[in-house]
Image: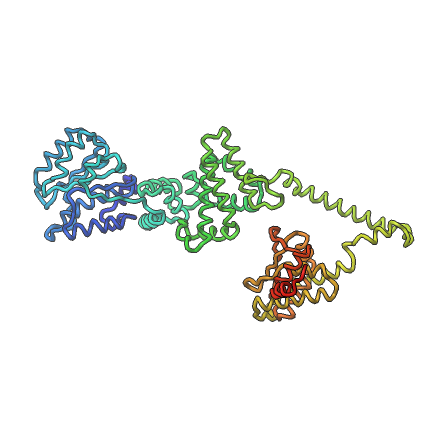
Length: 564
């Protein structure tokens, strides 16, 4: 049986070109070697599994390969000394190291000392190392590596050239896993490798360890389903389905879906964090400028773009805030499941407009979903049909009509019926005019706001001639304003005027469209109750009103010494 070598060791970088996601640092180190501008003490710092020790070993090997007479495969193993500070952190260990530093190398130019996990050295060991680090021999180079730079004393940091290694991006890790799949003859779905890269959280060594584990589980064919099952992570399909439910205000289905997630062994805290991240990704997908921030596979990106069209930005912002509040309160909550369920119900109620919302924590009443049950719908339809049948039967069996002098008939005549010929004619006219707005082949001549206001005044005069003084006064309360796309805005001071204006709007539209030869005109009525119209009641007010129209009136009054 062949001995198995884990991928983290098998595919450990042997040169700077193989290092993933640290191009800026590797290029700097290569240029420093080529230009003979390398410091004698370097500090590699950054998260675990990002290539600090690998770069230190590659650098130690490259330093002595500058001479053309030396073979390219020479690894200079006798010139490289690696010390683990986690287990060799005493003063005696550092003193032993400083004594070895004095001896020059037998082959090559430099002796390279790699001290891993240097932050584990004791205070006394750091102090013993200070003098050697400040003035090392010309043939000695120190490379220190650590994951916790803040634990190193400042006097050591000031003597080193510091290189900060960054977390490896999801796309970089995924692309490197693709290369390994090709070498190992493994077929893998793009989404499967993406999930592995996300789970690694910026550490390439972790990504390779997870990769080995998943391959052991599913063999030479990696699928998204197999990876999510093996790693026990929530598939992004779960979040897509949950988002569809909350957008459609389906609270009962949302609670059932959350119960299914809990039954699979997932924690509510983990789920609500993932849902907040999903909402964030949808927000990112709504703008092309931020689309590159979406670190997902191509198939998942299409789904995000499709769902982003369903979710509005105000909804996503409120949903993210509620999910974050749930995250903050989760640990202190005594009933954590109820907290998540309340949050989900509040999110599912954001886009609901069926009832007036009383607060930001509004939840759709349970009675709403009971009224939507299929049995109740059928029952209501049956009742409606029965009522219609009763009315028809009553009309057929109705007694002869009363005399015209009947007080009941007179009362009925005084009431305006919603089915009167006049109201039907108005509705038909309004429907006809509204339907013309959709016709693209009608003329749409350009006109100015001044031209609009001139015809508006003419229409007021027409109304006065017809005796429709009430409508004329409403139309004359303000001047119309012209916006983009031939949209006219008209402001009224109260709701009664707004309702009356809407009744007469079809006739106004018909008149303006014909006179201005533009059938793309629309009128929006704006209610502004703060607008007050000043009416003249007293003689002084009437005089002031006339004086505004003709300032010479004041001169006439003073010339002839007239009274009001």
